[in-house]
Each structure stands twice: as C-alpha cells, then as structure tokens.
Amino acid sequence: MNILVTGGAGYIGSHTCIELLNAGYDIVVVDNLDNSNIKAIDTIKRLTGKDFPFYQYDMLEADKMEEIFANNKIDGVIHFAGLKAVGESTQIPLRYYHNNITGTLILMQLMEKYDVNNIVFSSSATVYGMPKTVPITEDFPLSTTNPYGSTKLMIEGIMTDASKANPKLSVTLLRYFNPIGAHKSGDLGEDPKGIPNNLLPYVAQVAVGKLEKVHVYGSDYPTVDGTGVRDYIHVVDLALGHLRALEHCSDKEGVHIYNLGTGNGYSVLQIVDAFSKACGKELPYVIDPRRPGDIAECYADAAKAKNELGWVATRGIAEMCEDTWRWQSKHPNGFDD
Ligand code: NAD
Ligand code: UFG
Picture 1 (spheres, rainbow, N blue to C red):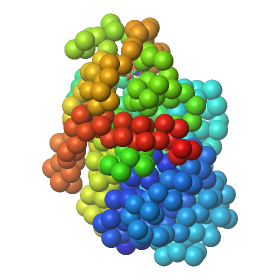
Picture 2: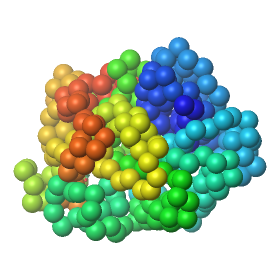
Picture 3: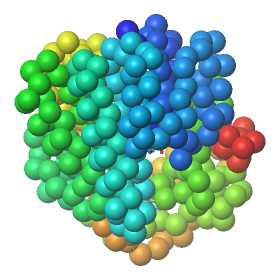
C-alpha cells in the first residue's frame, strides 16, 4: 500500500513515516518545510534504511500537488500538513484558514480526481473546546476557542460532507491529545522554531540550559496540585495509532472518529518532576498567571480506539520524558546540530 503523507517532515509526520516504512508500507511525502527541516527526511531514510519520494511542495499549489498524484499510484493519504500554533492563529487567522482549509480542499479534490478513497486526518482535542467534564469521549459537544481549532473543526465538517457525497470514501478523524517524546535513536524529535509555546519543548530547553526556568501558567486550577492537567501521549504511540487506523478503517466507507490519548492526566508540576528525573537535575520553575484560553483539565477516554482499533498507548510518562531528553541533549539546537 502506497501512502501519501502530507506534512511528513514535521514532528508527528516524521515519526509516522518511520513506523509506516518499518511496517512495510511505501510512502510518498509532501512538505513545504515551512515548520520543519529537510534533515528530518534524511533521518527517516537513515533510520529505516529505506528510500521514498519527497516533494518540497506547498499544498496550496494545486498544479504541483497534481504532479504527485499523476506520478505516483496513491492508495491512501495521511494528512498532517497544517499550521498549528494556537496563539499565532489569533494573530494571522486568514493565513491559518487559507493554509489549512484551502490545502485540504486541493488535496481532497485531487483524491476525488485520482480515485483515492481513504484519508486519515490529524484532528485535535481542541475541537472539544472547553469540555464540561473529563475524560472526554468522542461524542462530546464540539466547539472551538481560536482560529487554529476552528480550522480543525471545519476540516472535520468538510471531510464528513465529502464522505456523504462519495459513498466509496473512508475518512478517519484522529483527535490527538498532547503528543510529546521522540524516537528512541535520539535523532528525531520536536524541533520548534523560536521559543516553544508548548510545555514539553520548553521544559526540555530549560533542562539543556537554553532557557532559564519553566513558567508554570497558573496554580489555582481545581486540579491535583492547582496546575493544568493534560493527556500526554508518546509520539511513537500516536504514530502507531495511525497504522491501526489505516488497517482498520481504510476499506470501511464513512467517517470514523477516535481520540488518541492515554486516558491519563498529568499536571504541569508532575511533568516538571518527571522531566527532572529523566535528565537527572532539578529544574527551576516559577508560578505565573494563567495563560488566557487554557482549561484546567483535558484528558481522553481512550476506550473507543482500544475496542475498535485494538490500539492502546503503551509508553508511560517516564519514557516520554527520557526520550525527549535523549533527543534534546543529543541535539540542543534541534536538526541544526
Ligand atoms: P509540524 O508543524 O511539526 O508538522 C506539520 C508539517 O506540515 C510541517 O512540516 C510543515 O512544514 C507542513 N506544512 C504546513 N503547511 C503546509 C503546506 N501548505 N504545504 C506543505 N506542507 C505544509 O506539526 P505536528 O506537531 O507534527 O502536527 C501535525 C498535525 O497534527 C498538524 O495538522 C497539527 O495541527 C496536528 N496536531 C498536532 C498536535 C500537537 O500538539 N503537536 C495536537 C493535535 C493535532
Ligand atoms: N504550560 C505551562 N507553561 C508553558 C507551556 C504550557 O505551564 O510554558 C501549561 C499550560 O498552561 C497547560 C499545559 O502546560 O496547562 C500544556 O500546555 P501546552 O501548550 O503544551 O498544550 P495545550 O494543552 O495548551 O495545547 C496542545 C496543543 C494544541 C492542541 C491541544 C489539544 O498545543 O494544538 O493540545 O490537543 F489543540
């Protein structure tokens, strides 16, 4: 089976490419490297010992995207490509809508033209907005609090409408919780540009000495220790969830929706503690005010993916921190080292 991976040079896409290649899939990757590095592609090839076509194209360029479909027999698509920074999406919303929505429309029109009938999409727990309770099941009400989240919810709707109109189409919407961790080699991991927005890359850069201390956003939430609780999931477990989704859903028409999380929540201070153990030193932190828009707790009910896909996340928080630390300490400046 030949899978087109959009955004395959990015953090989650690159780890998924490795698992796809190791499982015997062929892949074709497209990424404009807007938020990634060509070295990720070289690393995927080196770690797997396998070659594949890579197109440094922008998904917004329909002619170039068509070249990929015309020159490769594509059996299915995993669609990671998109802009993903919540804060930035409130500053440049039109760019987010154009990139994420138009890119998806071009992709799906080409799928229709070339009779490619199965797609797995990177959605997000952000589509649950401000959930009233936890754990979150797939049938919770959907809403969003920022343009990034709105692009995810709109794309879910676009894909659902497309599946109603094309009975052959199989759509799988994977709602990720908080992916962290890195490949065991320590040579592939998250490489954010500038100062990280997300907790784990920030903590990792404190551990390696690039940043001074962790800023904990709020300690007065109704949680175990007052700090925000999230469902952190190892990126390799997440990658494997895509393989299970492909195996299970690709020949089943209609829309299939799964949470990909562990079902466990960890607070910010518990993460700082777990990372301190992984890197062997106490990490300095300071309590700051809450970050606007944050919720107290967000974690998955992961039963549906377990029951229907036979998928469970097996890597715990210690392993997630150890693997992040191996990548960060081996490559303090990410792929530029
Ligand atoms: P990432 O930024 O590392 O990867 C996305 C990739 O898409 C990048 O390599 C980028 O260069 C590429 N890209 C963006 N726009 C493109 C375009 N127009 N044409 C071609 N390539 C383009 O992000 P990630 O963390 O690997 O996330 C992958 C997907 O998962 C995204 O859709 C993201 O919204 C979603 N997601 C991520 C998280 C998370 O916390 N990391 C959580 C939920 C959902
Ligand atoms: N946090 C800090 N300090 C930091 C960064 C984060 O205390 O420097 C806290 C946040 O307040 C939150 C927790 O750490 O309680 C996790 O924050 P992240 O920014 O790492 O992750 P979020 O849960 O806010 O958001 C992530 C992705 C979104 C996605 C969402 C749900 O960034 O794209 O998970 O999947 F929508």
